[in-house]
Length: 204
Ligand code: GRF
Image 1: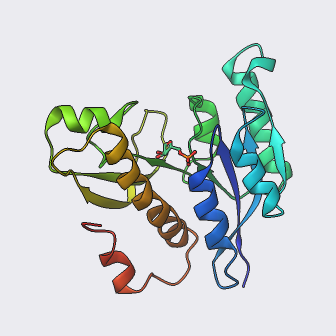
Image 2: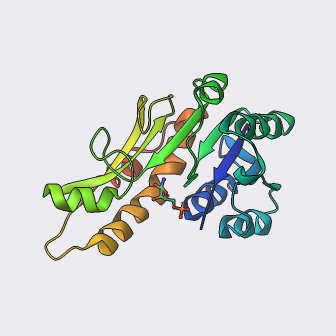
Image 3: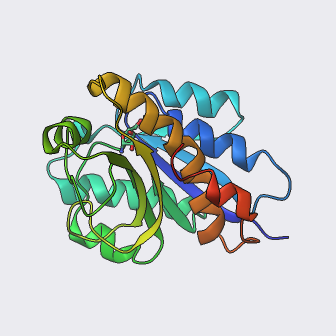
């Protein structure tokens, strides 16, 4: 079975990257991670990739005159590595419309809210302020607009009495770690997940 070659862009701790690395370790998983790129030199996710034997590259956005030049460097590294699908996993840079267009239909992101609610930053604070009783995370195709684009998969978690931003973020993050591999499996065109896997994503 040919496995889809994935490039993951990160900026930080890389816990979602870890979930993808763990999923890709299964021989029957339809994707493999060919390259991890971080714009931050000491991002912990780089160590996670190295421990899994995956190639890494640091491309600091500070080294470029503008966003177009930075994105061109990203694009070049991804294409050299033979990447077929880009996964954003806590990548804290806005990508240019040109980059996104170049990867149209082949770039996905995980966002910690049930889109289209709560785009942007501080999503758990936004959810608490809005008083919603269900919150969660979404994996979606990336378009030029922030946290927009067709939704691939979502997981819902309850907002419990007494929750603060940290407790809610922890609950959502645990859901993210199940959702992103599931969404990658769907996009990579593997077998659909068993029904019970999908069911676990609701109310967990
Ligand atoms: C996650 O909450 C993800 O949804 C958001 O950024 C965070 C990254 O966390 N886009 P990690 O680096 O994967 O641990």
